[in-house]
Length: 474
View 1 (cartoon, rainbow, N blue to C red):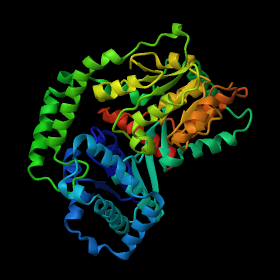
View 2: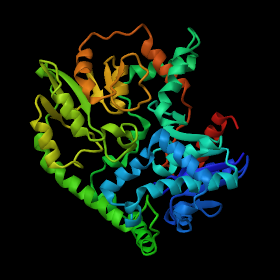
View 3: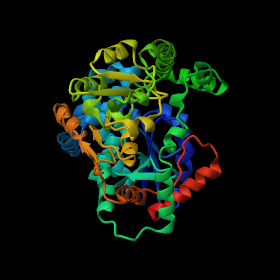
View 4: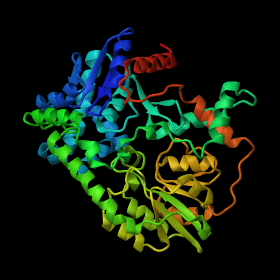
């Protein structure tokens, strides 16, 4: 079997994917698809790789063959050009796109299809490996893989400790767990499953998902984040590359310029944190108010630009909730620990001016707030999943893995919010062991693998690769 690994300049990505590629060579040919030469060198990829930006240098639009244009047409008719949006959104924050890409973003879409069509036909790919598809490079690769009958293996850290999801299509992940849930047979739970699930549910108020444990976004210290020897070496590497960059490096851009934008954004965040404190309230359960909870998201991120792309403007969502609140209720908008300070003072001021809205500090106890709320309204947050396990109803606007839960209500339009808020005021009950079976279905749909890209220990990463290969049945 021939395998393709998608790669870009995500930090520490190859701590895991290098040993994975070495193991996959036991089963067939392995090649890499990267966005740029920058990513090739950054990840020390030495052979059998294909680079999108180099491919574009030798392309002209009128040279795209009929097969490529047919696939472009089919993808666009099914998804539009939304696959470009996560990168388009990221460009809004960091100005990554070159003038060439900015002048015709649609050409970028067609070239991505052409790049992967040529690669799949040349290498006869059967399996594609990446994280859960979350950017244009991976999303287009996934669709071209589908046309070539290849399997996309998206590795995603699940909300269950020590487990990962293997996802083919992000937009239908919930269907996988729903099918397992509907086919659960009584008394089939093993002792190990029961022990894990009981422990998980008993401690849900204190458990933190694995992906949050090594989250550098929570770090606000500029000195620790930027001024160290490792960062200096990376800056020198980026400076060298910036002098010879390719205009089709749509995920890298000018790395020095992008890094500077990122640095300024973090400096502004540090300053904003001093000024926006005046808008924050601490959660006070003694107020005894009836309230709905809305958790803010970090931007840019797949949770908004992909999973909830139609509702990416959170102010508009909150405004609709605020003016739709039933009598006697309020909306508590809790800031995100990783996002606090990135939004402007003006954003928080606008929120404060909305009727019956309280802006809650990111340090407030989220799960305690869930327990005292009427229910949750969210785009795609993990808070919604945790609320369901704490027996609170949830309205979700985005595509989420937990939307098959009995107490999760999918909102398909902002115009539905007034009626759905009233629905959340009703009494919600669950059959005995419902949540236990809900977690059991999620457990059985995930894999006993601890994945941490930040771990540079080769022995640990080889062990993770062993677990994955076993789970895939190779």
